[in-house]
Image (cartoon, rainbow, N blue to C red; front, side, top):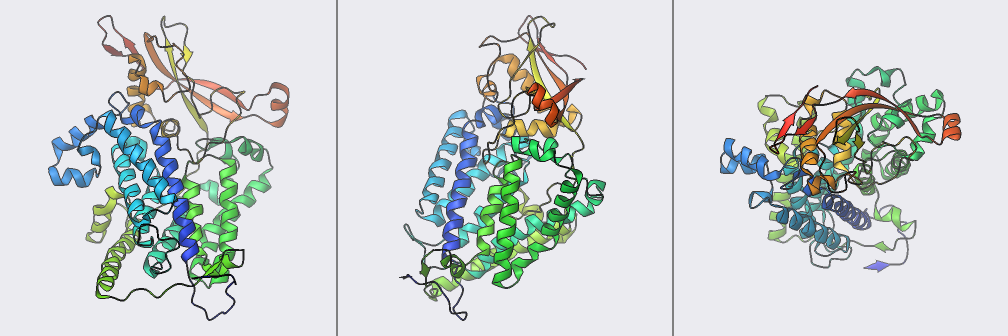
Amino acid sequence: MMVSRPATNKDEVEGYLWPRWLFLRALGLIFFSAFYALAFQMHGLIGERGILPAGIYLDRVSNVLGPAARLWFAPTVLWINSNDRTLTLIVAVGLITSVLLVLNVWPKLTVAFCTILFLSCIAALQDFSSYQSDGMVLEAGFLSIFFAPRGVRPGLGAPDPPSRFSLFMLRWEWFRIYFESGLVKLLSGDLHWRNLTAMDDYYQNAPLPSWMGWYVEQLPHWYHAGTVIIILAVELVLVWAVFLPRRFRFACFVFVTALQIAIIATANYGFLNYIVLALGLVLLDDRALARVGFPFVSSVPRDNAPRSRIYRRAEAVILGVAFYTTVVAFALGASDSFLALPSKLLEPFRIANAYGLFAIMTPARYEIEFQGSNDGKTWVAYPFRYKPQDPKERPGFFGPYQPRFDWNLWFASLEPWGGSPWVVLTEERLLEGSPSVLGLFRADPFHGKRPSMVRTVLWQYWFTDLGTKGKTGAWWRREELGPFSPGVTRAKDGSTVLNGP
């Protein structure tokens, strides 16, 4: 029942109807952004003429594992069919269900569908799904199946308030993202964190920088050192406020929200920071939101019928296993201990994860550029949509959109090409003129005509300074380091020939 007054009685039971309502709407938007990005990338990444076709991958898994084991290893509905039409259908249904979740239509069911469909994509994306942010969303989606209210049009769901266990697990996820990230920074032994230089080159070396990050990079070392201290203080100390009385939680929410907004402004991490922001909403309660204008809502006591009690017991068992698994996943990692068995069993589903962001800071920025040629002398670059390339092009903003191809190239540039054989597969698809792979780039420099050869070149990039930018208009300076991976050439019979280096 709606009441126009805010809650002022300290003895009043804390309610979480508005935080739940806000969180589920935010989660629906995040799922929508994830499926929207996949709509433009799925065919190029794992389609029939993509870089890593899902059909080939699932066939290989099927040849090694039995029917039940393969489904557990790769939990995806693409086992039914992995052609381009099915990929399109999964993404389309994902977009529809995420909109329904935003509109608060049958939230318990729609969040389950969003989670299952997104898991189906992630389980088949192979090298293009090795992001912690994917696990964050899947874990939040799984927990929200228990957190969401029942009913087709539940409104705030006052007759079905969130259980304390599901609320705790979402807070627990939020806490682990921060605290485990802080721990790994210290445990990694990376001197950048210990000597307070981790942020000095962070903005230029991040996977996909923004123009605001360029300006922040120009600030003096004392500012960046202070940022390191703040980050470690937040991740290792402040986040413990989630377990303290409500006033401490709210103060913590305000501070970490400001931090996440600053990160969003200075770098592009897809939907990562948005899911962390959304999870922060569960630190609030109805009384707090009533003070800023939300109507106060009185929760109805939870149904205590036998059927409801059975449901709550089942929920407690499932979430209890998930809680245990999250502890073990971080504490034991890849251990062969029997204690780590639940973690290994649930690992393919990414619903009980260990987190650890930026344990090691990247010391330099490298960029892999694809180039094509018809004579081996004149090489033309394939223009990227989101990665730095033209030194005079301003870095952009595109979060929460997740450009997986551009992002993966940043990871690939940090190690020898053998660690990312999909780079050479991309060269082969460009040599073939695959429309879906060409769609991952901003344009086709050969205008539909296939080149005779494709290669990759490695560059090192640095932000320019204020003086240089003022004179030349360049945001970057770069230096060619040489070939990155073997090039490919089309033979007279149409076959592909692999060349050096």
